[in-house]
Image (cartoon, rainbow, N blue to C red; front, side, top):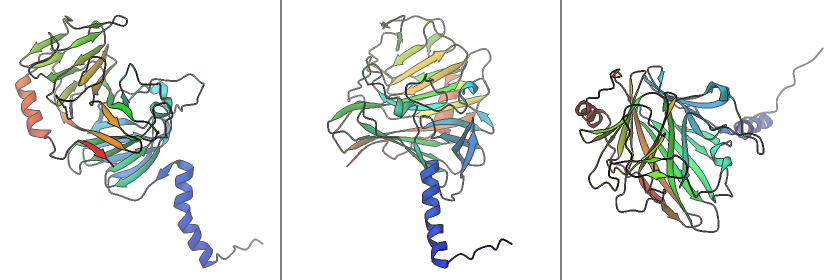
Length: 350
């Protein structure tokens, strides 16, 4: 007859102390119990972090690229997800995907080395507080950086703060920039407030066909009205660039949401994207629309780091089926319900 052994108190205490460390090492997780933060399965990934309050849900995926899989208001997701990618994991020397969801990256796009360990690889994850989480990438040899992403959902509203830290882990000074690459659900309307003294005759540039940037594009689905650039539908070529310094944009989704992003701009600093833009939009048919705030170039010495933050909101808003937008109403809503934080968003770290 089997007799259950009696645990020695010292050994039991040691086991209890070591168990969280062992679990975090196996699952790449460190977690504690905090309000509005939990571990869940989502889109074929068993190790996602969910941040939530009464109305808003954020799901973060460390297993593939350190991205956001869900940013939803009352159950309506604002992001584009490709179900064919569910559970996909990066393996070197095997065919890769362009991951869907709320992605973050570093640039400039045309000159930075390929960095699949950052873009597609596994990140470590930690729940850091109520409705808060942190992701940490591997140290990437190609770019000389390690990336840290911190997410905090407000206790009551849909405000999500997304902070990316670029840490120089190489022995040389680096010059990179923040590049947000959020894939929103397709077919919506993108609104960008304009500021004076744009370098572009029509307040935007259009990339393509081929290695060409059209500095005076004309497109029936892109109009300037009431001091807003309005992207009302699929343009001739999907990639667009703007140099607005208003520091926000919004996107109206067909499932009746207003997705707002606020971010800092620096008119007197160098932007090292090829067209020196502060925003890029990649509007691909009715499938997806990439919302891309871009930070200025940051020269980072070895061992130092720099950060850039965006603040997101989701608000209910009836989608205008006739594609006619009341920009005065939009501006009033943004000014009232998506207030700019007084906390500095661009920081340098010792």
